[in-house]
Amino acid sequence: MAGCVSLAASQVEGRQVVQEETENLSSGVVEVIADLGVQFSNLTTAEEVSISDIDQQLKGLHNKILNWEPEKSLISDLVRDVDVVLELKEVLGLLHSSSDNEKHNELLIFAESILQIGMARVEDEFVELLAYCYQPLEPGNTSFHSAEDESMDFSSSSFGEETIDSRPNSDVAREPNNVGIATIQHGLISDIVSIANLMSRSNYNKECCQAYVMSRKCALEECLSSLQIEKLSIEEVLKMEWKVLSCMIRRWNRAMYTFVRICVARERQLCDLVFGQLPNSVKQSCFLDIAKSSVLQLLSIVMAIAISPPDPQKLFETLNTFEALKDLLVDMEQFFPEDDGSNVLTECHEVVMRLKESVRRTLEEFKYKIQSNISSTAFAGGGVHHLTKYVMNYIKALSAYSETLNLILEGPHEKEHILSECSRQSSSPLAWHLKLVTAILEENLDHRSQLYQDGSLKNIFMMNNIFYMVDKVKGSDLRSLLGDDWIRARIWKFQMHAREYERTSWSSVISLLREEGICKHNSSSPSVSVLKERFRGFNLAFEEVYKAQTAWIVPNEELREDLRIALSAHLIQAYRTFEGRYATHLDGDRNRERYLKYTPNDLEELLLDLFEGSPKSLQSQRRR
Image 1: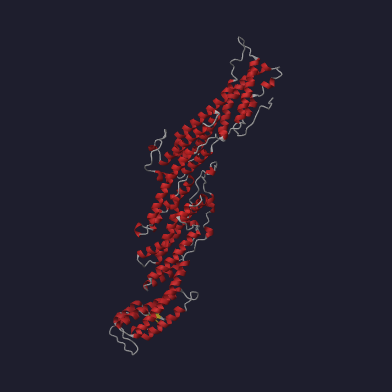
Image 2: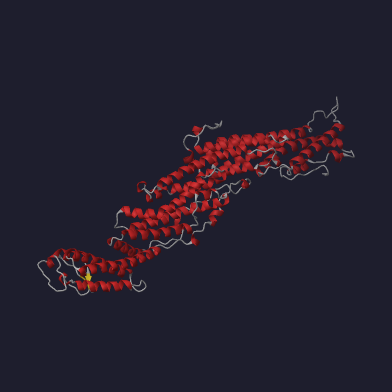
């Protein structure tokens, strides 16, 4: 085909062509030929268009289409040839309608046959090009193992862990650009668009859309597979063990950003490019057919998480999932408007609502579990109880979600106990809940302290646990939530327990160093027998306390040191004074060392052994 002939109606007015083998063309047909711009190799005017010319042209096109090879020819050549067949078919249709000629009908059938063959080849190339218009996700670039390792474990086995008090960094998960995905390949897009336009002009819209949807739907499902998201029913998710489910949820949270903001977004972009000349309804219909099932698959996993029984260890993954879905709502509203009839956006909002309900139910379950966590045995050593560590690390981690939790918790709730130092109206929803949690914990600790037979150890236990609570609050975001008044009230509490410990443990020991009753009646000289009894009594009392309290534990170094300093100020000073005044009265006694077993420096050194959790005995030791 050497050139393109553009024919105008003015060129053919008044002309007549009479040939035996050629049908006369009306001016209307000539105008159609001109409008279509049909290309012929040896034709220059419409009058020269003959049936034999069209026949020859069709045979040549038939041969070219059958023998077209993508490795040797451009796709644009195939599209152009099929387009010419389409135009010739339209011309033949007009000729056939103006003249009932058998040859016209044969050529019309031949043209339709060629067109079907051409469309089949074009459709194959269409699908092939669609498969390569985007580079697929590379599994190596979508691994989330390191992110999973950073997750928090709030299972019952992690009560004593100190490393679970920080929120995992989710910023990386919200940046899909970290994933290795190529941008749209515009060189291929131009061929894809030309094929789509050709199929549309040829009334192959249905076939074009079906081929497009099938190809891109498979590509989108491959994205899910590359992101390690399995196809699971709600029932299958509910049956999963928590360890497996938590890993899957973390993968979901990270995959969802990539899937929606890259995979789904590029499908929307591709639809707009390929079907740009078609009505919006066609573009939206194709896009929905491609994306709807995959998006609903992801949402079904979240729905399963939301409707599962409340469990405190699941709360943080639920919150992360809620935040992810909430962040993506704007994208969802753009891709799936409410008037598109897909119900995807409706389902999205439903899942968000269910997640909110799940968070509320889980917080109530958390409070109940603290309240119902009871024991019939005193906690050995009086240290910080596992429950205290668990609860305080838990709420410290919750404080990182304060904005999200205030959004979820705001609004009317069931009436609960109102704390004396805080009314509900003066706190944020989260602050109120956290204050209630700490009050429930303190009540639980108080019940546990009643299990101790030794009143001193009871005070050590309460002092340790309340100090731990204060320490966690002062050094974290909890301070802004619970407030300085809460901190001051608890500081007063643990200091009160420290004073009570000192009184109940050491007042009887120090009382042996008082001067009352030392001197004989009506004499200023001390009674040696009384002095011996006092020193012997002090030694026994000190050794008994020492043996017991070296087994006790005060884990915080600062608090432990403060207690020792306070003891030194009272006990050591009293002993130093008593010994300095009366020790000389025992000079010359052959059993002097039995009574003066310890110097003040000895006692001060021995106090350093207290609260280390390692029981020791002094009764068999000689200090002098």
